Length: 270
Image (cartoon, rainbow, N blue to C red; front, side):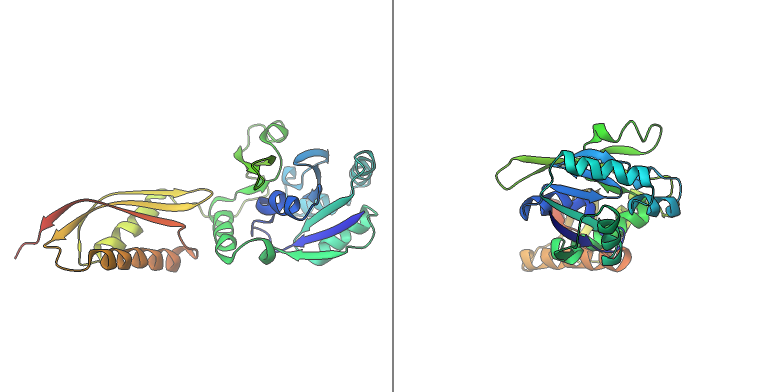
């Protein structure tokens, strides 16, 4: 069996990218947080995200429990897995998983920086810190029953470049995720509005729509000051850059898109 490792700090988006990455490098099975996932579906194991505290979550993720370990080893034989990707927070962790599951030596080591851009990593960390959300690379139907009366929502369907479905993700907030600072959407709106109003060309910000999901976007409806005796395209680009700079300074990651909608223009008062 070919054994590969994907490691990186917690909250950097490894699970989010795991299905696409595994498919791209020709790996059919994934070990993630105590689960064995084959071709995008959970086939064995219990997720560490169902644990009550971080200590038991870590023990679950490295297969400290003998019964849990044997269940996954048996499933690996049943499904005749030829290649597997072990996901962990460090090389030490993935080596520990490989040893417990008796997979043999790890042949290739990948890191989160190999599969995600710095921009994606920054946003993933922000979401973890402010919303406490974790991604599981398995379908919603396989999570819902275990997270009864807890936060769980559908993620997204994952497709290959040829538009073949290769899996789904589910978003959860584990019980052990106690520390996070929730930011109301109005805070983002206020910052974007303030940044726009600091630009001389802006008379009024009519509306700001902020979306934080797979992508972080701002849709901004503006009134400009007249006369427009300046290179409009350049000044609007400067406005976008000002919003992006302020957003990054306050929240530590960049917006994926800033859409400006010019609704009207108002003559400046002398």
